[in-house]
Length: 236
Image 1 (tube, rainbow, N blue to C red):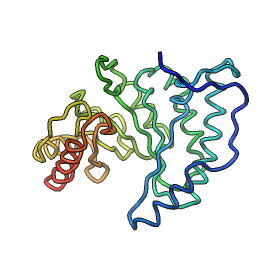
Image 2: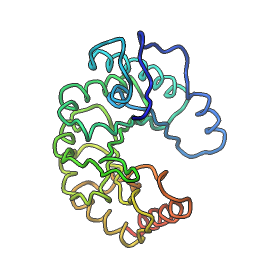
Image 3: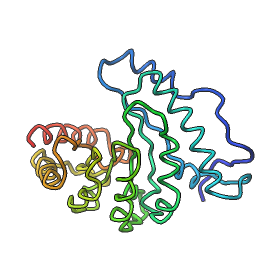
């Protein structure tokens, strides 16, 4: 069993954690800068609760402190603030019950663009991917959320882009590069996947992206995949 953090008292926010890092990044580039934060449901799912005794109550507290951090990042000049919710795909019924509500609380009052990343299950060596057919359930719920952008995995699970019809008003960060294999997708493959997605979603509301982080892969493979991603987007 892995070790996780414990919650032993009320959750509070004392000072910004990522604002200094954002400030440094902004001195190094003139491009837009995205900052990622964990989402409330994912924090609750990966923390041992020894205080609240109720996951919704704990999630509400987590969403409150995340919102304070997000507002500080917003004030500091972040272009996009993304909440990572990999567990959304594992617990679609919880997403409907309280996950969307807490996500919206975390993003409340932010003027920067907001995004949420939904894994379709992250690859772990020797561990089967616990795929469940969650997108048909959670995408309509996300369509009703305040979040503007949704990052989704389509490449490795081989999902049909027709699912994008379930969230027509959102910008889709479309996963068309696998994070589960070292083999390099061709630019033509990336282009084909993006054009297929554009049959079901406005092209100007599509962004090309890897399925998820490329940390499990070698540096060589990751760099080559990103080159194919850029070239494939240009082709499309």
